[in-house]
Length: 107
Image 1 (tube, rainbow, N blue to C red):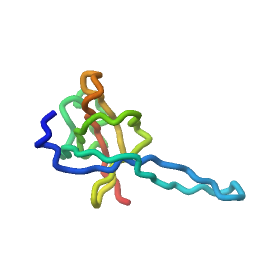
Image 2 (tube, helix red, strand yellow; image 1 turned 135 degrees about the horizontal axis):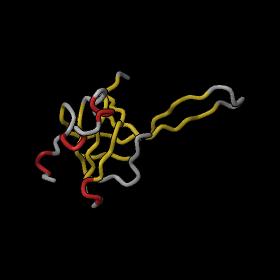
Image 3 (cartoon, one colour; image 1 turned 45 degrees about the horizontal axis):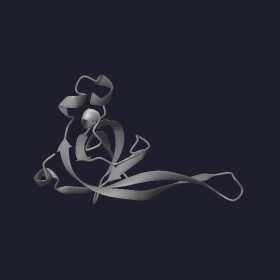
Image 4 (cartoon, helix red, strand yellow; image 1 turned 90 degrees about the horizontal axis):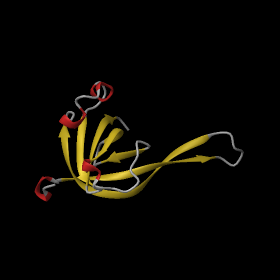
């Protein structure tokens, strides 16, 4: 991983579902768990080209340093955009780098 290509900062956010006192309705609250410098590429990376289920919805590929515990239940956010995680690859299973396929969504 070349640090010079990591030019964007993304926030790593986890959804915390909160129930009201009566237990009736729930609200989604996204809590920022961390942040990473990343390379944000438009389109899907070659690593995921063979997986057709990602190709239809994917809008970007995010390459960033490893974040322990990152799952598809998290989302990524930059200054003015939100990204839902479609797939995560731990490059070489070495816990150094994540290649994350995401779909940009409107807030």
